[in-house]
Length: 256
Ligand code: CO8
Image 1 (cartoon, rainbow, N blue to C red):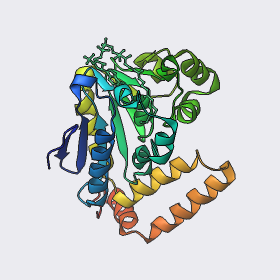
Image 2 (tube, rainbow, N blue to C red):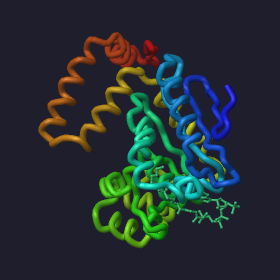
Image 3 (cartoon, helix red, strand yellow):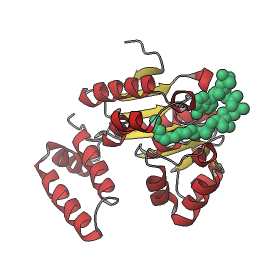
């Protein structure tokens, strides 16, 4: 299927989604979010996909929500249209999804990247929540997710001044998992995604769910949740296969 604002590729068990509005530095409009959500639904329903990668162009992951679309929005419209709620589909993805960020990830673009499970950055990446310069504040999770990633002091400074953070700073403060040369970004993201896609799919999904619990509950509740899920994994054939393969010194063949 052809889309107007994204490009979609399959690399064996990895689904690759490229944001593709080059004329607007991949600014996120409602068509793009709708198309992204359609592809996420399709990849999630597809047993042949074990991991996803979301990326942009060399110049921009996404330079934010589309300012030209938002400019004339009224408060009743934002409320009645439930503006932004459709963006939550990404954070509800059950399968692992990696953000591969080169260039600008600003405003809603930074929020979109933070809604993925982890961020792999090119050395050209620049992150920021510049909404305050437009007379608004982050509205798709920026004040909450950035604070959890980098702590109060740095998040407060970024949101109050709108300054950008480069890739080295983003790695130092834990916003991104790793920085790689820009030319290698997508290949490296696909390689990491393949590693994940080759694991047991239900175990990878449960691992993601469990790590996310760390953000949503107390430590004691999170530990209890983890233990119950871990115990239940002894019902999977993949547990027998994984441990047997180790003992037999061979690669495991997980069911999908
Ligand atoms: N929206 C719409 N168009 C954009 C956006 C954007 N966010 N960013 C860039 N563009 C367009 C420019 O208008 C320009 O178009 P044209 O050629 O027609 O004038 C084209 O992309 C290229 O941009 P520039 O010429 O500005 O390129 P530069 O390399 O000079 O600058 C920057 C790059 C620094 C990234 C600059 O474009 C910029 O500052 N962009 C805006 C960044 C920003 O403020 N982002 C936050 C937006 S608000 C937001 O994301 C709120 C999210 C809350 C949730 C929203 C839910 C929908």
